[in-house]
Length: 456
Image (cartoon, rainbow, N blue to C red; front, side, top):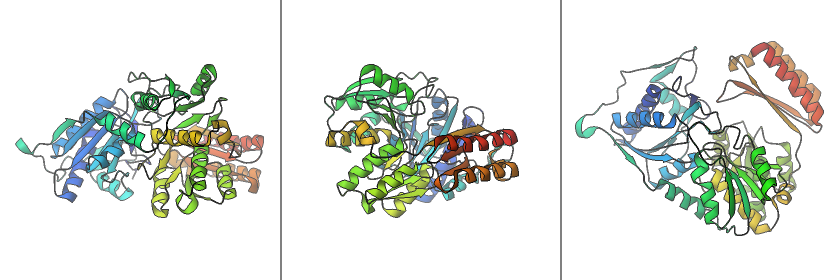
């Protein structure tokens, strides 16, 4: 049976698969389960990004929470990590984030976090799925006869607005790093998303001269040819304005990609190398270890090995990075995409905290971002995404398997090829890496053509 929850919550096109009815039911069931476990009316923090469908799904989610007697606390538009912080700050019992991150505006999603600010475990998600089944055709079926109460009168839940949500989160982010930014000119691309009302103001309050673009969300322009998946936008702005560096977020601001003063991209691997080596030099990196994923460049591991550190590799997905970090007791981990976790400050990737951490290294060392980024030698990587009808067919198609084996033989022991279905989109991702770009490109293209022919 197909799963409702993917690697990053429930995510699909809003008002079709991810309907208000489904959002209501998820809010209701999650609250009912929490209420039963705690033996009280739970408080649930609800935040969203700037998508047009956000208000609709927010109304459905908080109605679901109230229908079982819960107390919904709305934050309005806020970065995903802001909800994780506020759950802990308010000592709430859970949080629900309405966002589809970097995906196009027609998508939306629901991510649920527990009272400690961490995402639900697989077991907790399956407990919710008992009441919402998804068949092989992708149609969900709601059990309307759930055994949770439907109180009336004084028992009905409440919905309130947290008026100072923005101020609380911004104040906390600023407290995580002691840094002043006077004299720095910073270009910022807010992706017309949740960072629009946060990052430019934060940097200006710390003394920076900020040139902000894509900071006027209208509900439809989130992630449209901008943000962390289009770093060339902020790169061009850096070169046009003579900025010292550029910063760019995704729609819910849990990611950060930077651009140096020469307009060159400084991705999540580089940011982890810069911040990790800085912590290592200062004796503040527990176990001299960071955590990265299979998508991280081989150069990251080599950089840390040379410095006497270690990189633990997990499967792709921030939940697996976080799982390893908590198990190993380390504070820094993340993904090449810019989803970076500073676990001593927040329980999820936080683009604003990452920005301040990177800027603090820049200030402390007095170096330019291009100089800091040169610490890591980059192996050529090629990533191709192929749209498919059914992601699961990847594992059973013999012609695709043959193409993958051929690519692995071409790259031999000096490189690698990694093929996996996207956790949130109908795509197969093919990553190749090796010392020679032409060879890597040939290997990846061969696999992509086979997948397109067999599954596209």
